[in-house]
Length: 411
Ligand SMILES: *Cc1c(COP(=O)(O)O)cnc(C)c1O
Image 1 (tube, helix red, strand yellow):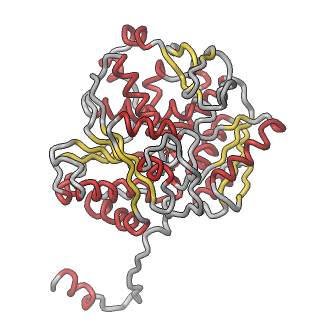
Image 2 (cartoon, rainbow, N blue to C red; image 1 turned 135 degrees about the vertical axis):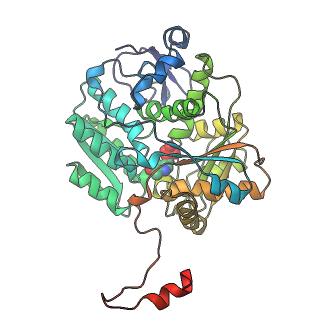
Image 3 (cartoon, rainbow, N blue to C red; image 1 turned 120 degrees about the vertical axis):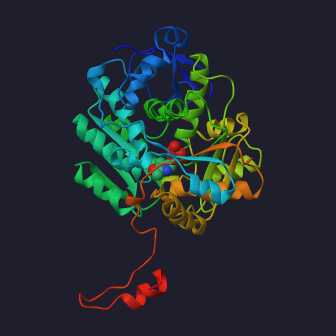
């Protein structure tokens, strides 16, 4: 199987490393390594027309992924999530073109499937038998699934108050699970502690190069789905920021491939007011974030008080002319209902946060009415049954319900 991977490059000190072997953080400075490709050769070998003929998983971009052995691919069919028009939402906001890239339809119900499909495949390629992860919830569920499929042992450290379904996923898939009375960064420190002793691969966000490569395929897909064009604005719920950094990398790669021009979307990072380290750093003009104390939000996937790749997120936001926006949990919960009612999309609270952020940006006059806006719904609302607190009357089988309905529907 052909990959155009040539080497790995440190995202901070630019040191380069050979493409062979399993990679973790930069041995020189401890920052994330990024996969680099011979894009000129790929440009000559791989056409957009050829891509159009391929299957709909993210492995359609396999030449631009770091796995060089087809037999190592561990797949549950992840990729090519639908790009859904949202005309009623757009109209309500006074906009013309709003789409939702619905990642809630991927295996395990979130876009974490992308990163972990590639990370686990890379691990398998290099003979790894155990993988460990700290996770706010969905990454744990995805790792449990992909590790099971690969026949690998998964060791998972997840906050004790993570969404119940995420815990069940991990347990049902046969992972070794620990509930941590703390947040994802506490869990991360616990994984790091065990790494030398147990020789597991730590597949934390950005601690190995596979997860970002998997998530960058969102950028490739989006451009392909828009007829090889970029949108004007991307609104993305940001925790560790892998997807945002990954898409920014994908756009640069696609320009070198001759698939898009130099135009870039404005990247908007959305966080919850209860955990907004990137928003704070962006507003303060800083290049890195500070640990956000007391982080709390219903949007568990973006409850990341300090991201390893914060400097990369902030760089992408600024280079793109974008912004960072914080929204309240009240707005997030309201947005879950808004998106479901108007468009039939049951979003995770993280995904719904993008709707709340878009409302703010429109109110502030930061989005032109003809601009093409893409919201990322990163997970399925089905994984968060407790978020929408609504009730309905309970009836005896012989009850007369017409007095209740007459008022609603008219007799
Ligand atoms: C993990 C997660 C996020 C944040 O993703 P990053 O790319 O790491 O910022 C957003 N939404 C959901 C549903 C998640 O599970």
